[in-house]
Length: 76
Image (tube, rainbow, N blue to C red; front, side, top):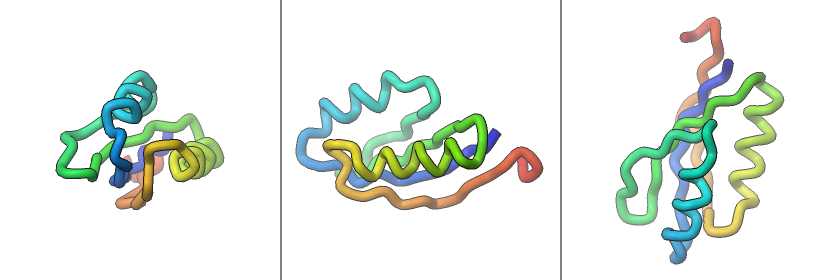
């Protein structure tokens, strides 16, 4: 199962986006620092991971997505 480490840069309406992200079982949210939110994303396979990351880049309230690292089962 791929595990991706990301840092999201959030827009001004952080409360709404934090609620949406927090309700997703495949996301684990870190501590918000300013407008930056570290998260981990668990996906069932590599294609799903790519789609999930792409969806985050298009989501309302997220200004930017930085991929910090991607780990796959053989790496874990």
